[in-house]
Image (cartoon, rainbow, N blue to C red):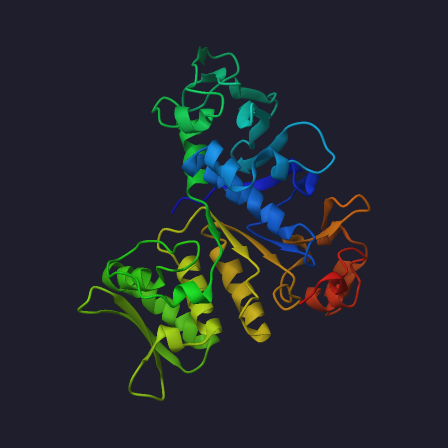
Length: 400
């Protein structure tokens, strides 16, 4: 199986509380830690916004968030800017060039306009970074081919409008494989807003290959796995039984009226219970495992505040499962729980906090003085955060 692309850096400017934030040295599992109101959900929404721009168009993603008035950082000027730097194959595995995708959006006549969009990379060890796709206000050009070079011919192509992504349009043309690769990568992202209540619903019968953002098709995914990937489903059950002793199996049962009932059987009892009577924690953990063990996993999975409805002692186990799954696709998680980061390394965690002006700042825990030494002496990150050793993002500022 080909290694998935990895985002190594995210830069955001003028996006709500993210006036100027850079997350560098992103790891396969990267956790954003901080109290309520620190900006974790806003970073999460940057990924969601970019994904929705590709799936639904910039205008719809823009309108959902209140347009420029609500999106632009308070008391700031200039375009909203988002840039990701990624490798199609992670460093250390037949290293490929670091590719940058840059997007700038301004408002014009009450609608979003893409003022700048480009893709650039460096070819060769001594090469110079150059843009092989460069667009502004619907006009620009692209260098085609598998390995576009700086001196290759640029093909000018006009887009259908100033709010149309060049990558979305040109990513449909076979002569642009690098553009196709980026479009495929971002289009595969899955940003999860799992709800135990949504997982309890009884949907119409019929298999579904991937869990929805809310988890309201959990029964359909269980049905699909039972029919097409029974070995993967058994793997999920094995992990679930290990994490929640007493759970024997889960079954999606089609009913005569066309609905699909999710049934959960505890080992001591002969009859299963319906999912609507199961605990919130059990359903949410099952949904997370279904997502993490997807036979064809998303290239990036976002998980927001997994601690909601889960017992604190289950959170280190879930973080471990996320770490294992990050070999198959990058995972970005937000949390304010010391339990979730308990077994993680400083390199995997960055703490978010607001500065005196009210804007979000992000600090890599690995760069905080003394933390690595305390970890080597036997402390864990959750303990150190609660005790105030980070010096930023004080958990008393909103920990629940």
